[in-house]
Length: 130
Image (cartoon, rainbow, N blue to C red; front, top):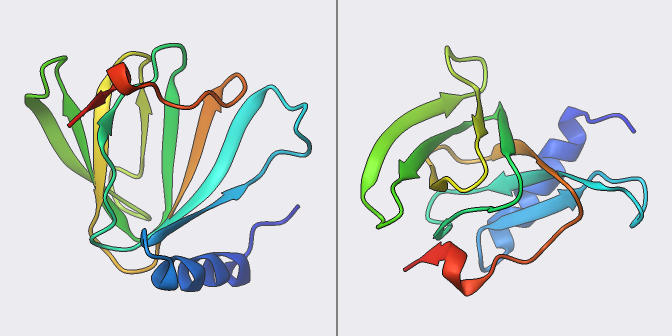
């Protein structure tokens, strides 16, 4: 599968009309894949809760646009925030398992690549900070 500008444009357009202002695109070859690989098209004002993944690291690469990445302690106190921008000085992050985090989309048409270990497991309530 080739990931081209047309695909990113299509996903961005879909995200712009989605009530959540984001859309995901599964890059796995089958449901039997033992990893998670997705593209996320995001628009400003999409809401992503503070959350963690207890059993997997998470890798984010900004392919287009920019995000404000935020890292939190276990009580929801902001520890650090920084911009990840396609083509910028910082365009990717490896988030360790158990680290609370969230992001804010800061450019229209942003698309990120996201990868996690293992099969998809829905986030549990104890892994979300309101």
